[in-house]
Length: 174
Image 1: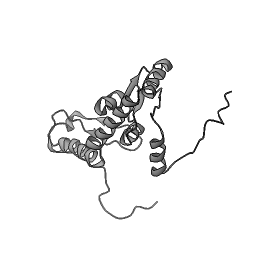
Image 2: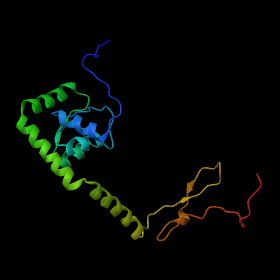
Image 3: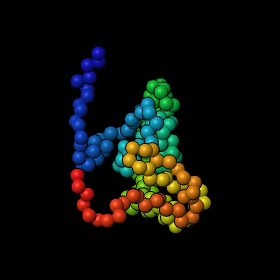
Image 4: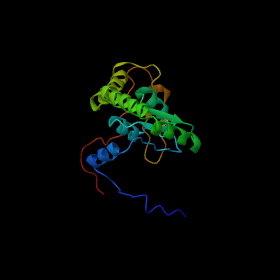
């Protein structure tokens, strides 16, 4: 068993200020996930603080690195590839600083809260305002039954069927 107690401190959950302090204290951030992370929020946080990242070339990371220019990708599962990329950034401070600057500028220009909210609204507007011939609407199922898709409820202006409701508003005995 490895005895890492002298070089590893687990601090648990940290505040926003503590996270920023941590990020400002590192030269490079790498979280070499073995799974295909679909979000990578920690990458955006590092880049927003001007810290370049080294991430595996899977999941959301290739798209994030391409969109921001804030890091390097390594071959997933290859500790040698990871070590090569980390060594490159540690030996080349100019490259490290350029990647950090590119990442920070891209985050500030394209990934602000307002930008992300507007992009999300754009998706909603597209679906709400545009009739879709290929829309498939789920039919609400009775309790204990699985829902199903019903082709008779497709097309422009399709709506979910109204849920079954009592015909009067009187409380039901329990």
